[in-house]
Image 1: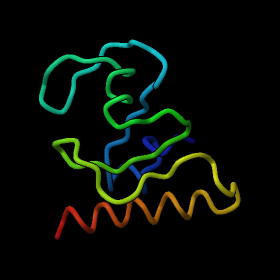
Image 2: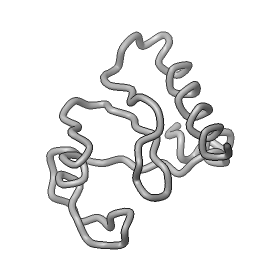
Image 3: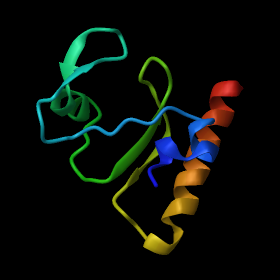
Image 4: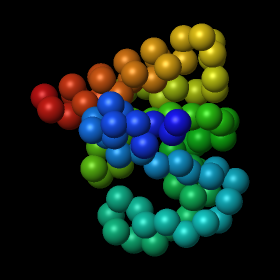
Length: 91
């Protein structure tokens, strides 16, 4: 089940999937039109999966999770990243 559909995860953050190699239209954090490829380039994202925690202005919070790493522990890494991001945003 995708995180965005899991109640435990959905209550903590907003999730978006960006297709790094596609020019699909998208609205940037400042309300201006852009594309998936352009947003990925702005964050210098080339490998997938890459998970980033960002604030409402699109500023990165913490370190990105790049690649699958260790599949057995990936969910824990992801949960720790989301928890740290939420904690930092709430001050």
